[in-house]
Amino acid sequence: MKILLDCDPGVDDALTLLHLAPLIASGEVDLVAVGTVHGNVAPDVGALNALRVLERAGLRDIPVAVGAGRPMAQPVAFASEWHGTDGLGETHLPEPAGRPAEISAPDQIVRLARRHPGELTLLAIGPLTNLGIALLLEPSLPELFREVVIMGGAFDHPGNITGHAEANIWHDPEAAELVLGAGWPITLVPLDVTHATALDGEWLDRLAAGEGEIARLAARVLEFYVNAYHRSLGVRGAVIHDALAAMLAIDPSLGDYTERPVRVELRGDRTRGATLWDRRRYADEGDRPPVKVAVRVDVAAFRERLLASLL
Image (cartoon, rainbow, N blue to C red):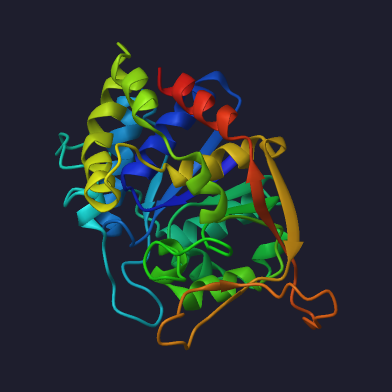
């Protein structure tokens, strides 16, 4: 399976890379490239973080491209209170040996799609600015991808930035609206299912008991993130949103899905960035393409698979 990863590393992005690492090493997954975007951190910081994590996992030949540094139509914002100023939980890991690629992340998306038509799964676990720019550069892009799997949105669940908006969509609503209406095969993995997979203290203790280098790195990076959850919610735990999207991209049978057109609210003072679908059976959506939305997942399988990959 060929995956092109678009991300904003980010603690949960780093955990997702560590989850993918043994699958890449075994040949089950071919991570053809990584692109970074504004979101949890600036994209240049995120690119160095991706290289740091990949190199710690023994993966040194995967190109990492820097992408969009700001949204299409609003000021940029970062999430240092959740991910630390360095994006990796204030671990301040040493500089990576590798350097980012010279190509931009949107150009990389277009170039790789043309090189591997119908073969790539685009796994987007950050704001969707790079995908939106790539669509403007190459309007036929939706025909060139096997699938696009997006961690983003919230429907019957509160947002995690506002009462209605999930972070990846909120960071660039215009890009998200463009991407969700473009007509490529999309699977959307919203907060409704990611929050159900929250890791508890017992899971964290099992990870902390791991003796491998990857387990130690994961536990170290997670510490700041877990403390942020404790400050916010008063419980010891964390939600690794992005890893669920990666897992469903590789094994869709872990989830149940529904298909509906999805739109992004662009104008509301309190609802900007919210993802919307019309539940009415008779609703006329015109030619708006449907999106496959995950509505239930195998929580136990997610937790055990994530832990096994890190151990």
